[in-house]
Amino acid sequence: MVRRLSHFDTYQALVIDFSDVPSVDFTSSLAIDDIISDARQAGQKIYLARIRVKVRAFLERQGFWTN
Image (tube, rainbow, N blue to C red; front, side, top):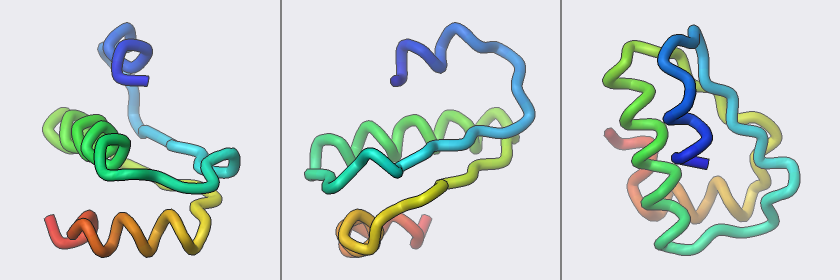
């Protein structure tokens, strides 16, 4: 995902569709955080779509929304 995003130098918003993501672990949460941090630094809007309760809860425990 990071490599795919690196091919785009201009975009207005980043939408990450979590509909096919039943769970995440610590490593994948770091990758998601890196992607979102890069988009924030570029001044882009970020949308997390169709995120499951289990995934959101894990990311919240990792402090995902406190940054």
